[in-house]
Amino acid sequence: RRAALRPHSSPHYRNAMNVMVLRRSAAAVAAKQSLSRTAPAAVAGSTRGFANIPAPGKQDPKPTWGEVIEKMSDTFFLSDVFRATWLAWEVHVERKVTINYPYEKGMLSPRFRGEHALRRYPSGEERCIACKLCEAICPAQAITIEAEPRADGARRTTSYDIDMTKCIYCGFCQEACPVDAIVEGPNFEFATESHEELLYDKAKLLANGDKWEFEIAKNLSVEQLYR
Image (cartoon, rainbow, N blue to C red; front, side, top):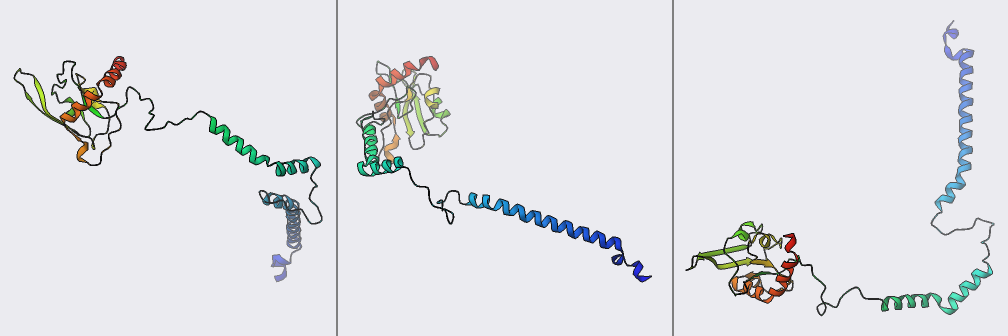
């Protein structure tokens, strides 16, 4: 009675266990066969990018006569050296892209924003009317202006200072000026040896305007339609 109650001793249980063991054995054999078939491909893929080592018992393919003659001619006539030399001469005689600065200078756009300058009228009168719009609009607060009325009632600046070390060359001062007094000229070569030389006063700005007036007037006339 106790043996009948044990499931392990029943014939149905033993048959089910035998079927399960057979299935597992068949799956293991199939997996082993699939690995044996894919192993050569994996080995071939793993050697990609490395020297092709011939399999044991196999010899390297013999080069053809054409390959032998080509290799001998390259070695004997130094064809690679002559090709490299010819390429160097081609590049040497081509048109140069760079310029010989500072003896040669490239073209600048009429909208180029360089060193600041104060302009005058053809009569020699200063253009600045001390409206201080440039001082108000300067985002870097680099401009400082002091003004007072003259005997004829017109306002003129007594001092016009620009700290060029603060300036960000945005061009807002030039755009805000109603009389084209303060401009950013075409000069970009104004490096100095001290900080004090970059603190421009009114005399320095007027001197820049007198020096670059022709170029400044020309650039302003070109851009007149877009202002």
